[in-house]
Every structure is written in C-alpha cells, then in structure tokens.
Image (tube, rainbow, N blue to C red):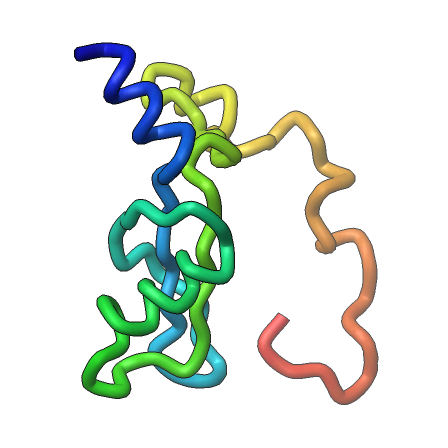
Length: 101
C-alpha cells in the first residue's frame, strides 16, 4: 500500500494553489491539487479555483518545494529586532514630498 502511495505522489505530485483576487493585492492560498506537471496544475487550478471569475492571477507551486517556519520558533523569526537599530529608517530624513513615513 505504501508503495502505491509513493508511486501516485511521484507521478501526480501535490501542488499548492495561490489566487490573486484583483490587481493591487497579494496572492492568497486557495488550496491544493494533484497534477503530473506545472502546465496541467495551472490548468486544473484555473478550473477548480477561479470558476466564477474570482481571480486575475494564479500561482501553482510544488508542495515539496515549499518551506515554512516552525511555530515553536516564532520568536527567532518574528520578534522585533530592537537591538538592530540599523534596520529602522528613523536615522534618515524622509525625502521631500514623501508622505506617510
């Protein structure tokens, strides 16, 4: 049984689908699907996740190519870097005519 699952995953790998609902906003994760290659994954994603014209752009990414942070190590990734003042633009005057900084 495990060999059959490995064969399916190798022939039809899992793809993650990201949809951008309109111009000017980022892509959001819409779901997953299985497809043998990127072209069929993109075609299937269009059929499955944008049937009612709710997207203007699609990304399909092989799941095995994605990496994420571990929630247990959130401080290492997301804690404020107060000890690294050079990361903040507060030492530089804002350019003339730029608002909202």
